[in-house]
Amino acid sequence: MSGEVVGVWIGAILTLGIFSFLYKDNPFYKFSEALFVGVSAGYWFVVTFWQYFLPKLIDNLALAYTVLSVEGKIDYHWVYVLGGGLGVLMLLRLFPSVGWLSRWSLAFIVGTTAGLQFTRYLESNGIIQVKGTILPLIVGGNLNTTIGNLVIVVGTFCGLIYFFFSKEHKGAFGGAARVGVWFLMITFGALFGYTVMSRMSLLIGRMDYLFSNWLHLIG
Amino acid sequence: MRREVPLVLTAMVGLTMIVSHFIPPFNILNDLFEDWFFIIAAFAIYLGVLNLLRVNADKIYKKQADAPFGLVVILGFLVITIPGLFFSGGRSFSDPGTPFYYLYIHVYYPLSATMFALLAFFVASASYRAFRARNVEATMLLVAAFILMLGRVPIGDWMTAWLPEGYRLGEWADWIMDFPQTAGQKAIMIGIALGVVSSALRVILGLERAYMGGE
Image (cartoon, rainbow over all chains, first blue to last red; front, side):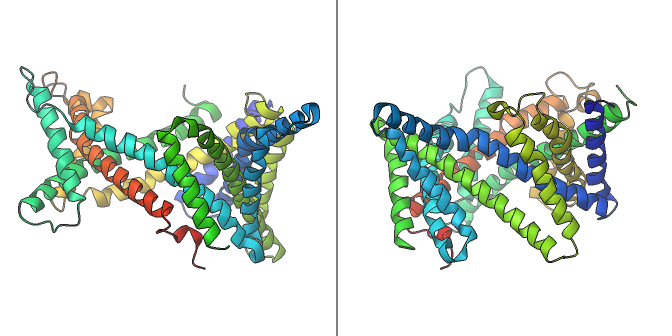
């Protein structure tokens, strides 16, 4: 048996192992689940090592060391020692007596994320979306676009009113909020529909794998 | 030291990231901080992995009922990590033909895809609960999801083939996606933007300290 055939058999057995949960929780499923947890951890460990740890930390420090040993100069890349240091502090969480030091690295992560997302969300989710909502409400000779633009402007405005909780949802304000809820429900319905379809397509993919790649009954 | 240093660090880094967006010479700090972010994130993943191994090793050591599965977790980790780190050609570890790629295609991918495919069955039961038209809002959700699911598959257009072009189920689905769905999505996105901006400001100004834990 070639390595490929063995691989397909392994994949098929593990697929059946996970599907066996549909009958009930059983050792075969638990084995597959535990293997999934271990393999996932290993997968991300390896990916992180080669794609982030090595190029971002080790390569920069190696460069700094090379410049120091060849030219005798202290290079800018030595600042990566601080990044590595903060990373090591993160691991101290495993030791309760000094675990509080991991807050420093966590603070760095939180600060970077807050600063980065502040401008990113304000620009892409805020300003660009508001700009995209400022549409002409009457488009001469094009009823479809006129209706469409009206739906977008009214829907977005009412949806935002629904999210405004500083004023009680009563009267005209409450009516607008209710219209906003309708638009949000249509959005959630569409998202739900897509979620169902994506899960179904994954299921079809696994069935195709079992019946086509493994058993060769179709295709 | 326990509270002040993290607060100052968060404020300094957060403000630097914001300032660097508006003042281009500060971009060098932005790039540096992004690199450090990835380095710390890598260590955070290692922390998670080490913790996972410790918890499972503990199970085996204490001979708990699910100790054999703890052993499977550890062996699963080693089975993909050792080839990935030492026998898969270094930086080209994920290229087709390497042992890491083989394990990804034949072990990791089937497990991961099947785990998510399993959700199809649970989504079916969730659909039943969500799709009961109890009021106007639930009915709108039901109708939107129904039109979209049918409109995106060939049977939807087949069922409405008798209608004139422009009024078939696929086109209804397109209209929902292009207009009412876009409107709702925009409202949600603008709401998220305002939420993120205010949360980010609270974190940077030190008003939000939940990330430091309860101590």
